[in-house]
View 1 (cartoon, rainbow, N blue to C red):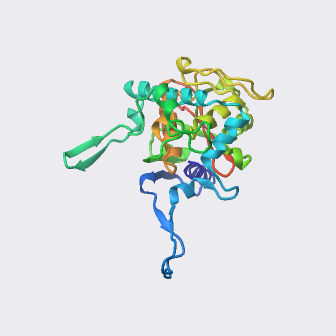
View 2 (tube, rainbow, N blue to C red):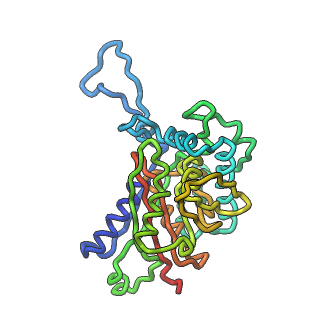
View 3 (cartoon, helix red, strand yellow):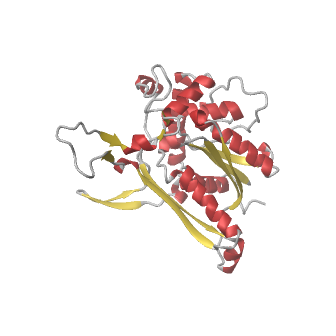
Length: 328
């Protein structure tokens, strides 16, 4: 997520300095093909040696500096912000339900490129995400926790392990005019902040606040917010710190005490069509997926500004501000 979105910003900087005019920015991830390795066998093995497979997906999702899996950082936030298992399950169910409502309403059609696959049954068109689940609170409540006994993170309240790809075309204003291109949105600004690695998931709350301050905007100026749902506990911690709204009041979870110096978001403008808990989180593609969805959704609701944000393993938060160029 962070790597591809950072590349997105580096391209923007190169365009601003005149080094590039039009750039195709793409990211992909095949988490289902993440390999296993065996260490110290390249130059031979010892007879009878006990050689173990290392899961590269697990290793990649573990902070080497503090030797902590990403899921444990979510549990740290759950403890710090007094989040319960029930709250996390309710939020996860809401993400699935919001995705279903949005998909049925056709809100993903303009941003999705169907692909044709060959199978034993002939050619099949894949035009919808496979990860979303038809679930209930009762089903979610039965799932085991993964990182902490009596914790909050389960397979149902974490972002999905899946495959995906996304692409964006970024161009300078002069290139848009010269090529007679029709832009969908304008990149207004961005912000990256650092935070404590053991609670890396809180990064978006501070990144968004600083981004608004840098661009002299108020919360009332922002039509939509998209915050990557790495874990339900992580998102809800950001919601408590920044008092982010849910997507729809139907699924609204009450917000407990927040910091006295927190900033308040408008209602019903965050992750309105579900997030990574429903859609999945193919790491190298999530940045482009979130920004593409935000661009199209901003135009659909005829809003002016939107912010996409994510936490970053290792202790960072990133936020990008875009503007609907057709909004007067």
